[in-house]
Length: 467
Image 1: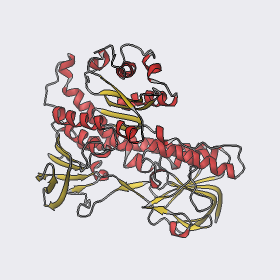
Image 2 (image 1 turned 90 degrees about the horizontal axis):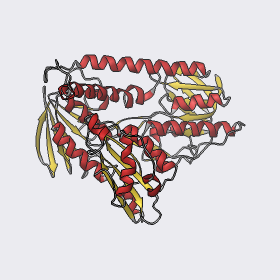
Image 3 (image 1 turned 90 degrees about the vertical axis):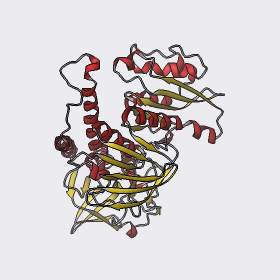
Image 4 (image 1 turned 180 degrees about the vertical axis):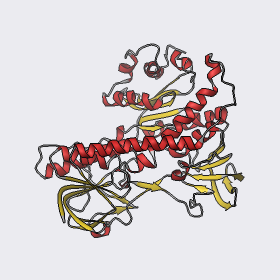
């Protein structure tokens, strides 16, 4: 039986960061991982592999537009996609990053144990057939694709996101159920690579958790630029699985029957909290999610939970920050001179890597009004921006949500070129608590996409310059 100060179960972006932080603070630390490689869902079945597919789709689109940039010798519609090569490249990147995490564990003297961790109570964890003890335990077991009754994934005709990342043949016709980040990213991938895509969403907009104007503009661009058949306020009520196709029956605003090669179910993820021994602890669950306080501590003494298994945004950067908070709180209670910070979830940036990209932080217009703000809006399009036209992506906009009394900026919502990078500026703006007036007076370099920020601020007062 081995004894440690800190045990972390799960090596995703929350788990491995927690392990490193614990070790940095002087705790004897062990990391338990059931998969053969470190990195968790984000690295092997989520964020990172999805982005490799998206980058391929982006490069493919650029090649098709080469003639518009004065690059000759590339005939339109001659390019072909090699799906097997896409998967091989993806796997190379995953292996490289996983090896990088292994190196970090060795560098920080974190012990790594391969196997499934099972809580036994009182600081004991069973990994395969061995018992290990830890003064503090951090659960970081992540999540898995959510199934719907009657639409369970079989890996052939009905797919989940794990299956989609391993496809070896491009579907001619793909139906995607769910227009959250996962659904719109895969719609963006397969439509650009040549598939005919139908995107179905039960709610009244794409990206239902984002500002309504973002979802509306994305739907227009998807339909016009990428010929995606967008159907909101619609649901699938029945599926017929055949040898070479799948037939979906739809109800709602866009009812009918769809015939395609495959159905991708992208309706979200569920926490991986089953079978890990929580019943042997005093920790409580809320609809499958572990309940924690502001320092990620559960109702079981010494047991923490972070990432996709708690009721906070299912985002890798959120899990990483939670991992640091949990590790620091554990170390503090073991005598380390450290004071963990409580996370401000009102400033969590969200990124969707479809084309065009989406990046948002803070309150949406609807949310701001619902909690009583007297709201002012400023929206500025990328269309007149020199840099947007230079790179050939003059679409989308920046939208500022502000309080009309205090002039405080409540939220920033971006759809357009490199929105997932521009949102970093948005985070800094909210963190610095800039007012609309202060942002309107901020100088940005020319030509750059960032020039749209002060223009959006001026648009709050109806006096944007570049229109």
